[in-house]
Length: 164
Image (cartoon, rainbow, N blue to C red; front, side, top):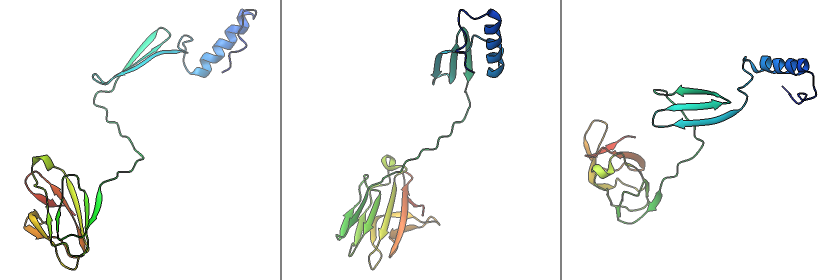
């Protein structure tokens, strides 16, 4: 509501009518809460504090779950290799095996690699041997890639697990 008509020379009745109209349009009965003078969030106590022209409110967000949608992409390292023996490092994510790769040297599935995911795409004409086995869907140890296929491995800190 536009309050520009309020002025010193106006009749008290006219100003009162404009103020009452504003209060009604505002949806509350307080004519002193029109200016936010303070706003803060304490991330330790999860308390939101709001100050408005002489009034203070707090909102406790303890136990509240917040969801966020992030419009972004994730870029992971990818490299093509075509040498006979390939060493995969902790910095690798996706490895594309071309030609005559005979062996892939996986990093140890130790505690420093927990959660690390490796994607190995084998384009060669035969299965490629791995220096360390991974556990397949039935918990068997497997020492080869899939010929002309893709395996997704993730370290659980003890073994490389086939996840896809």
